[in-house]
Image 1 (cartoon, rainbow, N blue to C red):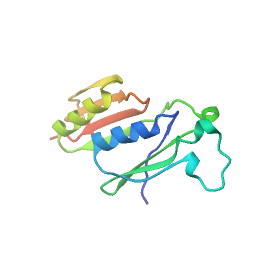
Image 2: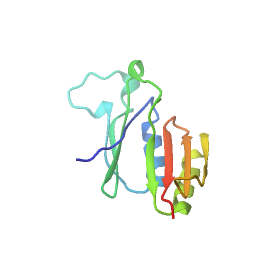
Image 3: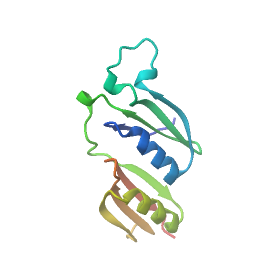
Length: 134
């Protein structure tokens, strides 16, 4: 079994996944807008929003959607957790995700990790970056 995060956005999914691909690497494996759905009656304002996108990073997947406006809720109570062996790599990723977002806990050494930080990116997605203890 594999688990993968499925992120919800309010019209920023395409921009967010281009950003995540730039920061995290990987390839956009699939992307479909609500307007590309076959035989669907989609309101004009949803036509270009993302119905599904998947970013493949090695054997991991990050997926997302632009929720219909009447069902979108800001993420709370969860975070996407990233784990790295090297603190320098984790710090680089953390800084990229935190840019123009909100730092909840600055990236720093902790009693359990060579580096750990928490942020909410500019798209409203909470992240935790953890780096293994040496």
